[in-house]
Image (tube, rainbow, N blue to C red; front, top):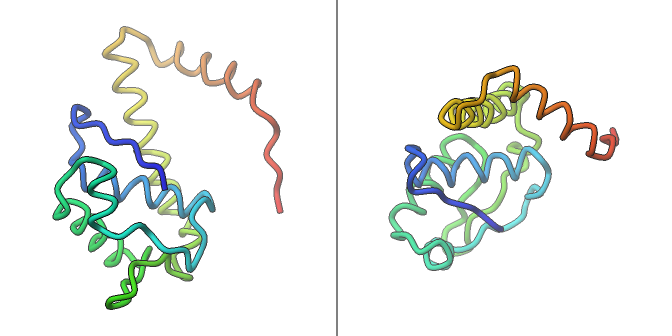
Length: 130
């Protein structure tokens, strides 16, 4: 499980973990029943305090995305994938907000960003629907 944290983007680290795990579940990159890395291992990998990872895992458990099994680890919930449409929309809206904020800081207008998105989308392969 690859996570990318940014200590300077204004979003608490534990929330970055929560949002990225939710995204991985919603996109199917983390399958139902799949085990998440142990807290200490993920903390070492990300170079953060284990309490931060523990808090993220608690939030994910409260949201029903993961299940904790005592002494057996943390697993993606069967009910947590695919996430409800409203949760997927929230994840996408959060990413859009971050993109627009960064674009404004760099001096781009919304129209510029839309044009760039359209150009980039044209380069991607068509999505396959199952």
